[in-house]
Length: 203
Image (tube, rainbow, N blue to C red; front, top):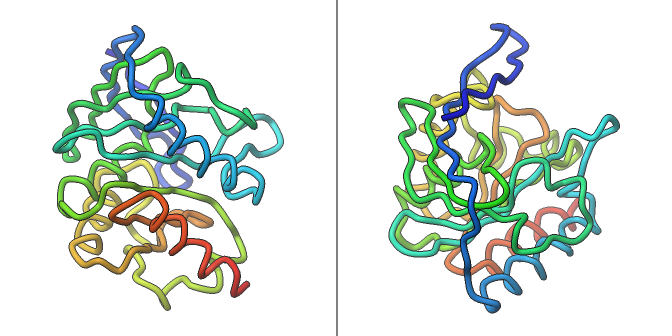
């Protein structure tokens, strides 16, 4: 098990518990194409990418079966194109314990808990997209469904707040306690992307 530390501006550091089975897992070429085609569009729009210094942002995932899902791995925002080894399979999680279990050659990041929260509460959601965009966030915070600002990134609290909002099929959530953070979700990855771009195009 790895215990990753993440900086929290108000409280120093928080713990994210990651059980990572570092081994290859296979998924279909069709699933890979679905993920990569959409991710490349998001990367070109700088909705997924990396900040100066190499800190990556943004993730994309699709449900595999039940609450298992395939997600782009930690720090992959540094790459314009991904290979299969850049994805991880999240097969178990516990939001209250801030815990993720994943399999793959890349490890899942703490952002996986937000994806997990949506898959667990909304059986209609088969794809989740998490992006960063400052202007979008500033325009839509508290206008579109927004999680509590007191629930900060990387905590069980933000995942639980997202989960409450994801009970409805709004398709988009502004992460109130995570400036720049926006999540879209839908029955298919195309619908999740379309919802996100609808609001992006209004900027």
